[in-house]
Amino acid sequence: MDKPRNTPGQDRAPGADGTLTRRSFITGTAALIAASAAGIPARARARDEDPFEARYYEKLDHEEIRCLLCPKECRIGDRERGYCGVRENREGTYYTLVYGNPCSLHLDPIEKKPFFHVMPGTAALSLSTVGCNMECKFCQNWQISQSRPEQVDTEFFPPSLIADRAVSVKASSIAYTYGEPVVFIEYMQDIAAAARKKSVRNVVVTSGYIKKKPLLDLCRQVDAIKIDLKAFRENYYRDICSAELRPVLDSIETIAGEGVWLEIVYLMVPTLNDDPGPIREMARWLLKHAGTDVPLHFSRFFPQYRLKNLPPTPVSSLERAYDICREEGLRFVYVGNVPGHRTESTYCPQCGKQVISRSGYRIRGIELVDGACRYCGERIPGIW
Ligand code: SF4
Image 1 (tube, rainbow, N blue to C red):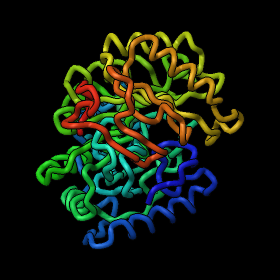
Image 2 (cartoon, rainbow, N blue to C red; image 1 turned 135 degrees about the vertical axis):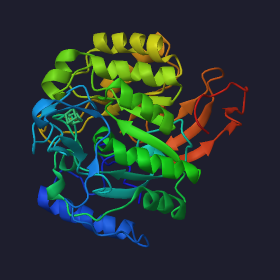
Image 3 (tube, rainbow, N blue to C red; image 1 turned 30 degrees about the horizontal axis):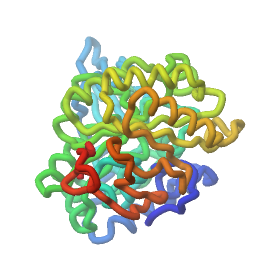
């Protein structure tokens, strides 16, 4: 179930190793779902039968609609879809085409997301549908994010069955991950509600490119959100991700303000977003808007998708970024995708002792007592 320690890329969908063709990947994930869902009486349903109405849009004249889910605010005519390709206007009513249709479903260590301050050592039932509202040139799950609903052959998994499955496999949480959960928000919200009734937590792995109203709703429904902050420059978001930085920063402020547990991942791509200047600016911004306790993970890049021309991130660049952010006062900074690195463990910011020992995705020891350092009693923030 776990991936090898040297697998490049945190939270890649199983099978998405970048060497498969889209067709073979899709075939593989269909089999994965069948295997993962053993015991779940999934109900087969044709995709176009009984589509689910989207929650965040407004009707315009002439059967047009405007999507109000993400900052792209697509204006969509009858029988057309938005940029993400998974939401469609039919005669002035907007529908999600992926509700109940995960394309990947797997049991992962929560460290793989990565969440380092949320129930360490537990399993997260992880799922995604196809579709994304961005297109990052380095996407490690592009086979999912850039596919369309017609390209995946799945069955219907109602939210209650996903929640039941989490209980039966002893998952402490459900993770909405791999692709971009924003584009399947209705499905995520309904699974989260079903999971809460069964005392299963909900954690979201997202780029944070979402408008404030749906994000505020989501904050009331889930326990933790991890934001992929791609860079601290607008031109990087525009040129590499087909998106904007400002709305993502707004999302970080909103989540922090709502008191939902927040972690940040920064994928460091050589020559594109590894400049120390913007990293220092980012650290100062996070301190001011998210506080000293927000965990920040610098993740090592490996060449894939449309950025195969670049080398893996030098470990020295990650360590430099780590040092900058610690100097600025962030208390929990990590280097990811470098198995065995000392900074993949958690250290008490008061006494300096190791309080959570990690090796890759494995937990080797936890020295917390009721969420506090066993050695000095300092509170370590998180969900324990
Ligand atoms: S969620 Fe999709 S359809 Fe809606 S605004 Fe964003 S890209 Fe467009």
